[in-house]
Length: 175
Image 1 (cartoon, rainbow, N blue to C red):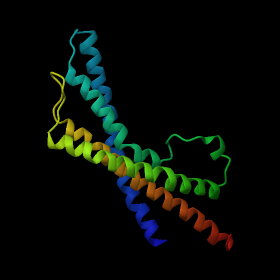
Image 2: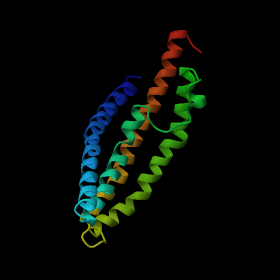
Image 3: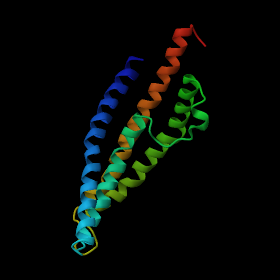
């Protein structure tokens, strides 16, 4: 149990720090979109690089904040039944969902994206559009990185649910 608690603490700290750092991308995205709208509709200018920067920032925001969203229980879920469950039943659902769906899915994405990302690094991929952004390979590296962060937070959530069940068992003298 000590290992589970230590793992959860370490991953929670990493996820919190990552989440807070990545949250600044939301502000940056807003500023870039405002700039794009202003230059496009007021100055009648358009930039491929600015438009690509918008979706690059959004991609990073989405990929790198998934673990933070999971940690704070703000991910998409069908709450109609879940909210009616006891704490122990929710822990069981979280364990089953984590082990059967979240962890295998994140492993598949990390594994499947590896050659995609390594090929991008090998050719030093950049935007194919004239005036587009260079270093697209760095953006693609966020795919396995984001899913590894998501995976290790998923493991922490499974461990947290195991502790919920174990704590309930300890308090009642066994179930």
